[in-house]
Length: 395
Image 1 (spheres, rainbow, N blue to C red):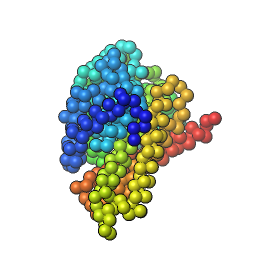
Image 2: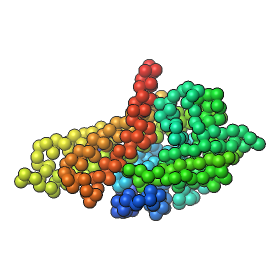
Image 3: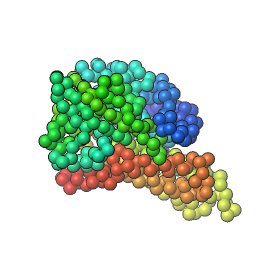
Image 4: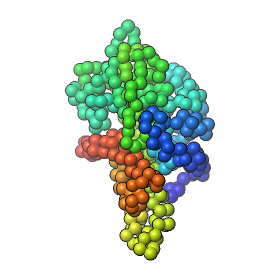
């Protein structure tokens, strides 16, 4: 459904659909099956997306981007995910971080980092928060002095010295610039004692650890980041010292909507495959779609996808408002979209019968991909607890 798209939005979505059908969908199955997780990534896809301006869509025109709003970006992200979830995540991460940088950077930081990002056809971005021992504590968040990042930043000789390790970081081994959260006040919780640093890839003391071998969402690399006496100057502190979480509150309102749009694209792809399958596969003397139970299953899939999309679009639209956004929109749309996607892909698996379990139909890949977002961008249970806190403490 077009959902009242403007002509400009529809043209952009059509352009992205053509790009994804020509440059992503044909290669995604083979890339997904590479035994080395690092080999699942494709620079060719990123470079072609750069040529079309997809990588810099949310960047302001003054920096060489298109300056699209969050709703338009969510439409693009879903469209990419119809071809492959991992590719969608590559760009969803970059698009949201580009938005954050131009809002949160000082003028000097913007001049230093944004034009270089725009010029680089391989310019991807990453945000490093999750650690081996710290994940849901920052999602909910848990505001207690015992809840701290293990990655620390200490002042020494006029710079900040970072030590520690991050993991599960999307674009972790591919990005040119990282937003790294580190504990800077050891007497406070991560909520009130952490700081965000801008860390270019080439910074001494910063290296890439292992690339995680994931069940699904394989076309985006997730990797470990290692900091060993990594020195970062004061000029690369993003926001205020000991107030890194203000960045998450103030400048990442669309993050949840983009995650929801990504997994929603998986659900849409599963529905479209199943619709085509049931229109051609015959059982009991009739096409599958002519059986009432199958038709009802398809109707439910369509209903759930449409409802999830409406929720995502509301969240994305609200993200661009100045103040007054319902805070539950920063948690619940992703939970709902992930649940919808899981229900849709498992129903698609059932309706394909034994063929659904075989790689040839592509359904098993969609099942593996959808499973990622039961956990990615915040585990569903953690996000529900986060929203529950807003509901409990709100008006």
